Length: 473
Image 1 (cartoon, one colour):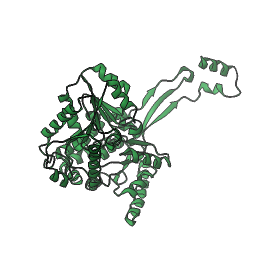
Image 2: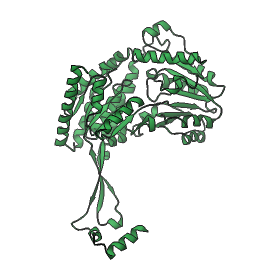
Image 3: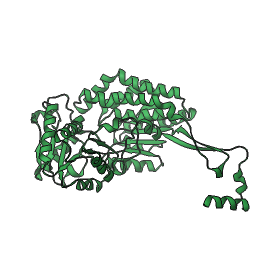
Image 4: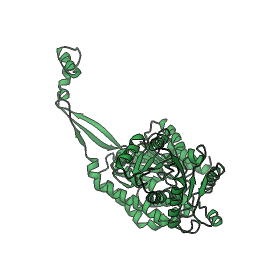
């Protein structure tokens, strides 16, 4: 660990202490202040939209501004607006019924902020995946420390600057640094830790938080399948899958990771998807609307995965492109891999890039069995013109979320919980679900000066026997 990292870690601990002190001084931040906090987030997005998009593009080597606007900046603005609109309802104390055996009395659930939360955000959507959890935390009345990915330093520094202008350090702050700082961050005694990233690192984060019994939300990933049934037109499936897969060059946690289609139709569907890609991007190398791969390391990993599948006998489909220019710009053109070997990395690891394997299935039950026998994915997509058939796929599988005849967009519905299950994550957020992630639901039971329960205290007598018999019925 360098001297600079050691200083950053000490500063981080000091900031956590100051935020905890500030939270104790205002344990229940009033609704008007929370709404003002949400307005500050939305306003900095509007005011600095161009700078945010430019920083993201700088980190990637090239990211289409349109993608950054719709998937990062506008997403956060809409998220903050939704939370502000519904905050009064979300914050209300809930009354619940009391059984006759405990009467007279009243019971309620108070929704109280957990305290100071830590947010660890990834590189693939470096602004949205830091700011959307922050929106939820601020709506809940919490204070927050954010640790962005070191792979997107320009975005991290800009977020740090913008949030420093909008909030006091003891309310919201951004911590930058490499893996050593990130590891130390996950070991801090937060009141809640929110992590978005890989399953592998997620396990380490959970173990680090466990030492202090810090509750965690893990937004992970996995191999999200798309199942195309025989009833669904291939051209329509190709348009939907091609858009979702190649948005942000496949560097999306809920992008279709692989496609399953009826045996014999793999190549036809693959060619239809490549045709869609060729229409969307004239040349992946020169088209600014096509996003680059975020790092040399990730580019080399994806290239090696394609070549491994090629060596195993798979057919590789790509639109026409300038291969030399694409390599120089760290761009991998939209790529479909038809029938890769089952044991190759494309079929055993989350791809996280513009490479789409297509495999065949004999019957629909075989396709759902293939999914059900593996780790639960973050998302599952089924394409079918028959609602009963689509429901059959949903009934036979489990995933964090799902889309029928569409992909990606389920995460944009503010009232749907977004999160994984099993290896793809635990916990959820967005809308009220995000508010509740950073909220403690505190149970309260009230009575008057005297309550009949005192008659049940030792020494046990007839009253106890009467009540016990009634409750055991």
